[in-house]
Length: 414
Ligand code: NAP
Image 1 (cartoon, helix red, strand yellow):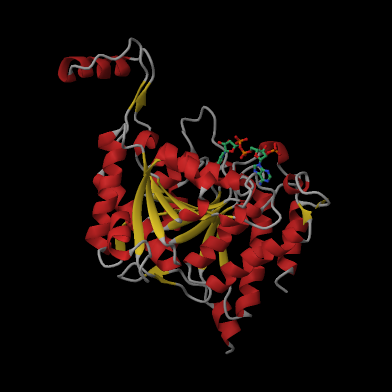
Image 2 (cartoon, rainbow, N blue to C red):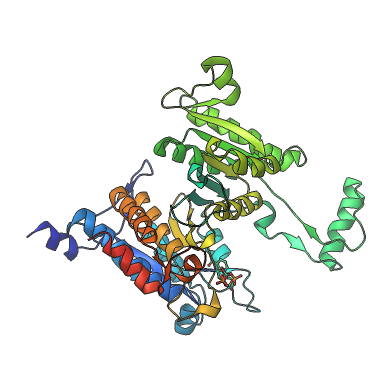
């Protein structure tokens, strides 16, 4: 039997080895969630491009066997549940999955399907690479200097959802507790939110950021925090970040002071510099001196802000890829929403989901295919036949449909 026929005959699950590395068969089964709104359009486009990349790099020896999961509006129509437990279990069983955007059902008791997926699967690292694609309009003078990856903590901080509305019994009970037990008087009728940041969750996030920097040749990991003001949460994040660097990566990391005191400012081969920056200062620095930053590790709320701001520096959310990664599984996803006004119009830019697919291929170890996707998208954009969002900003560009743009990308790999 030829290798092509053999691999296609045997779709298999990806498994994890005891050291946490992935065991990826030639024909892995990968669950996907098409998504709501523009989801079907951008998923169709992404599937076409991902398959073209795999074919271009591995001939017929590797192929993805896609498994659709009914989640979101499709899930509700088929099962009466927006996020069926079965779908979550399937993602966990298959280790790697990809998803389009999901509508947040209003008034159905669900805060956000995306947040629910991250929390239920304990996908603690939201990973957002930010890299310039030539020709894409950018507000920066030298956008090509930007090559960063944000590791945003996904499970705690003010995003944990521990909050009580102004005037409720719960808010009043918490305010009474503060007054009677802690001697702290809150302004009357305060709404109250809690900001938990823990050593365990910080350390696993920072450890994955350092691992990413080491595996991908980034020179530094910056711990972004607001510890000058919030000492026991944001400040502790930085302290625990330095601790885990020393405890788990002592031979492979140095601090900034070691860099200048012992190495004269030159990073020794194979080492990553761990530094920290106050959040507001880092927002300035990524504009003024972006080439001094590589991987950024940060608590949830800072991470939300900085990843969208950085995406704007390289041309906006329409092209920004992302992934949510935990110890047991990883879900790659478009970073924008469902853009409901464009539903079914075959109009929007599929770039975010396509580039998330490239991240997924890298994560699976199919790095040649991941690179092929990035090169092809770059070449297609340079050819100036692009979706409306880019066409309206690039002089001389022709607007094409989402599907035509995807075909042009796939064509680059033939
Ligand atoms: P959105 O869906 O991201 O859309 C906002 C605007 O961004 C669109 O009107 C469009 O701008 C632009 N845009 C988004 N995706 C684009 C693409 N692929 N190509 C080109 N332009 C794109 O944000 P929203 O309207 O605030 O949210 C709509 C729904 O999505 C909500 O239910 C929200 O909860 C959900 N959501 C889901 C996710 C997720 O699944 N990860 C993330 C965010 C929001 P123009 O109008 O300028 O053309």
